[in-house]
Length: 386
Image (tube, rainbow, N blue to C red; front, side, top):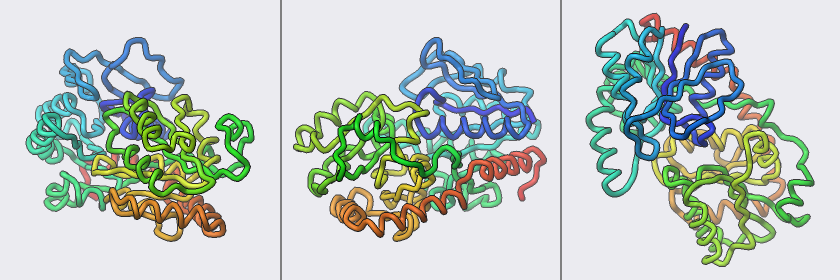
């Protein structure tokens, strides 16, 4: 099939939406499909990766943060056998919807409902209005809807559509390359680079540090660390963005600067080794803007136990007591207790590490995920619901 993958952000921008779209493009191309990714050109002269798919970056006449008005999407995506829209995409979903209304069954549409867009102030009000008006039309027009988990979908803005048309929805979690993200010996040069002592344990966070990813809960994590004061442990925060300096200052103000390492220079090739360095991975996200957290699946595959907020969707990755623990969203005491429980019980941590790798191989191997996505796309193209 000729497949158009449409997404609001795409690598080199770091974010779960773009990473999932890239995984789809890569996997479907390797399965023999002709894939083109359509996304906004937020920056000039971005070097495209050596990949089996094409990337068409279009200049938006209007843009704001990760939103971009792309009227040219309509004519450019006609003639494809299937369109895959990764939602939310403010300014892009409308063009897809118009195409679908015009072409009907001649344009099979699979929507990936990735997350609820949430924010405060006027931006939040605008998102809420968009969700109320545009989202129902998009989900109604879709031939199939992929969600990362039915748990998340049932608690999201897509829940009314799920109740009305459950036959449209399919749960397909993100996949990871388990041959890349895997347990391996710790790189001593990396420990030396971070100035880690021989007894220092590492608690890892990986995620965007920009305003679009404020929901990741880094500020909450720093406050919890200051209150918990885990002994012989360092917090490693890997990511970049316009809030980084604010978080660095917060660590200093909380008196934990010596215990916290900020690294905004880790590229994709270096990320697996950073996971191998970690004794524990934490995902302290605060609201439904986090649907699952691909990073915790990468950690799982690397054999790193998880601590994650008990958010819908996010909690489905963690097998409580086996591969890690969840904690009540925004509960500092709960997170602190879980940190202590794992860091002070090395036999427990080792058991969780082995179980984490087993779970990743069983549930999140990217080849199996690509095959599931392909099956869903074929059903949509053939007009079948099951």
